Amino acid sequence: MSSEDFALLALQLAVMLSAALLLGQLMRRIGQPAVLGEMIGGIVLGPTLFGALAPDLQQQLFRASASVTTAREAFIKLGMLFFMFLAGLEIDLRNLQRLARSTVIGSVGTLLPLGLGATL
Image 1: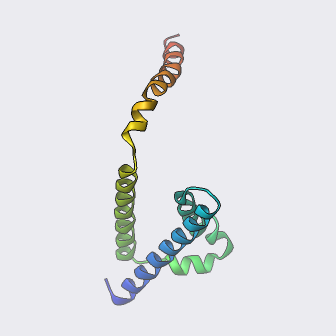
Image 2: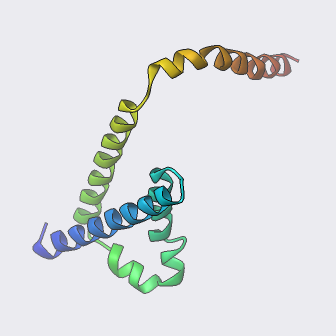
């Protein structure tokens, strides 16, 4: 990876992290989970919004050689791994035990009619 490629990768990561943090904080201020803002940040930076409003700028920022794309994808997967780990740390097993009965009732209420319909 050349120094230009590394600079482009660093810029891409900085833009993605900044959008996630800013929109996450915005969502927290309005009483929503930060993860909602982080997901919206991905939508904003993607071809759906940013690519439609400023396609040249989006192409210039996120165009990359194969090595930059591979490294960016690796960072994204590593970030998702850490995110899932942190989400797992926040699970309260007492709540799962409390909700187990309603979960079983809801599952049976869904699977029983589905199974009967498939049988018929």
